[in-house]
Image (cartoon, rainbow, N blue to C red; front, side, top):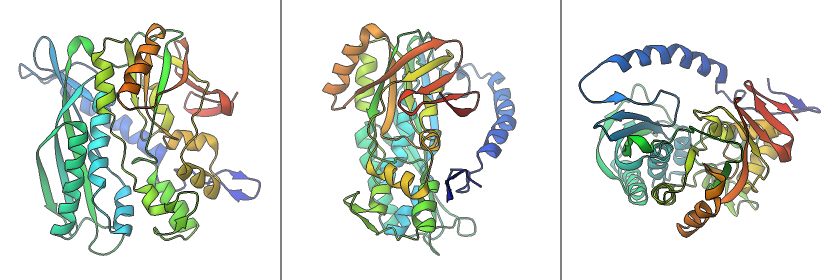
Length: 368
């Protein structure tokens, strides 16, 4: 059960049905087996960074690497089924992948998709494809192939016959001497945040449990705070950050770390090669959807920031001397960057949320 504030149940991601501890154990067993394949040699394709970052990179030439990652849309697909609206989730699929590629300093170039359906409905597939194509245009990548599978005995959805899964794989290119994985972080390096468009494609299991089961709302339930239905707010497409981040990477500014704020919330910022304490001094105002989730689920601040993006979909750590340059480039690319904080110390991984008097250290949040 979740912790209680007074006599009210406090919802958590784990309480909603996501086995966080089991996932950690599964990864501990999976990773050693996967790493054994690093020693397979074919002349090219040698991994140049370890598993654990947002994307992997393999060497193609002495100077060039190919970055690759894969991801899906998750239970956001159930909201699409509840609303009968399928033309935006393809954007999410592209976004979840190309945004991860950016985090190793790569420029996305190509994408493939995988659609598995309970029952084949050409109209639905066409709508999904429209979203994929729109996302590809935003990210400036080519969709070079994919797979459509009919798995009626395996796939289930919000209602009989509606079930499907959507995932993708993206590749990008990066010069081997320009890979970004959070090396060389120094005290005073500045953390910049880029706004999200909303919930994106993470934490939907918790949000759905609170809205559609705990409260008993329909996906079309209108909320004045949202200016529309809760389903429409949850279905807002994940923002694609390719244009501003590629511009920043090409600018020569000393970009030290890049983080896509997805599953794990703000803890994604700690996925850096250099262990560091990141002090967050300013927390942007999150969108109304997050306030509704927290209010109606009695969710703690710690749980919100370890599950959701809370209004910040991407973060950048740059050298202090290059802050203004980075802010200008990001603004010129149409972004609204915000300085969140700075690297407080190096040597130990920690995230301090000063306005909330919380710190994440050694696997859990504690009060400051």
